[in-house]
Image (spheres, rainbow, N blue to C red):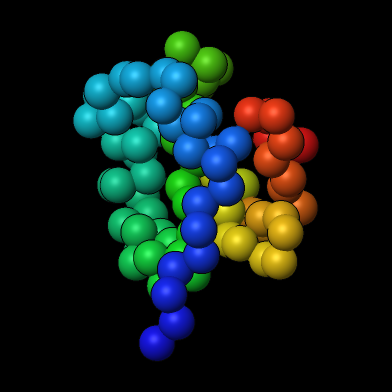
Length: 95
């Protein structure tokens, strides 16, 4: 069994800057209902689920595949979403 990779310090700071009750976030509630499988998959991948701030959401209706863009899997010095997009974190910004 391998140890979980260290969390990127920029990501750690991003998580500390904004606070919202996740149990009232429409994205998170839809994720729990439509894709409960993702929670186990993210844990197996040592991944991260990005939860958008509720104020940034333009809809409260989500397709099941929509959530794949918000799951980050660590790959070397970057992250990859389950939908295949490469993500980097630099200076507290997702690139």
